Length: 289
Image 1 (cartoon, rainbow, N blue to C red):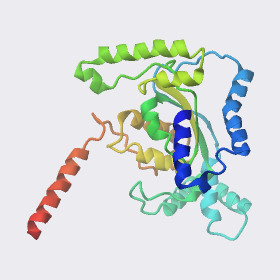
Image 2 (image 1 turned 120 degrees about the horizontal axis):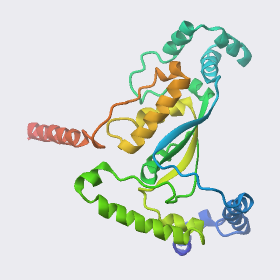
Image 3 (image 1 turned 180 degrees about the horizontal axis):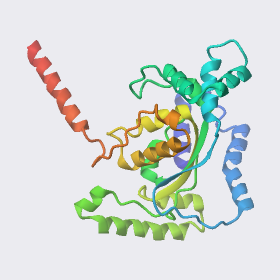
Image 4 (image 1 turned 180 degrees about the vertical axis):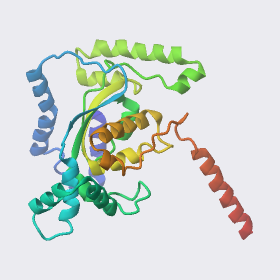
């Protein structure tokens, strides 16, 4: 990777040298050292720890603000008055359950689809989810940026997932054999270089990370990632997040457009939609001719 970066810079210097002046200067070298050494320094302080294995995909709600609901309602009120935050908060606290629902309904008036984003008032409440899932599906969830995410290093410590389609195809034993070989390779490399060892981990293995997100992001992510076309592995994670949030905040959760149904395979219906579009295009071309 370092060789590739060096070669890229040499080529780019021929075309856009002014944009890359700082890449190799002293300040950049200091910054690269900072990025490279900070985690190493933390590991030296923490030392070796017992691996807490996650033997299956799971979601835990490990932290939340119990006052999230009233703070969200205060945010709704605050935007429409000329008073202070304290006044909005006092007003929200004075509402009974019926009034709370009425205010929430008015703020989400006639919202009927997930792409109709909820307002910023929902950014006033936060939750922290700890998640164990396969690395491949995590790659879809870690793309959501309107939150704080932090992952642990990829490893083989948490086992792996065998997709149902692999079992149905009759190649599960070959699949598992390949993953077990990768596990043995990882455990040889990991004591020597924990960063390098990550490259030996197939995406079917599980990993642990947390998401610290506000309710506005929870709406967006959970609604988007539970649609019928979504992958079953991350649909399960988002459904679990929704269920956990619903236990603590039933009023807020009642307005979320989360699909809790189960489907046999991912991307179902997509092929049919493509064929339907192709048919329409063909018909239009025929009409023009």
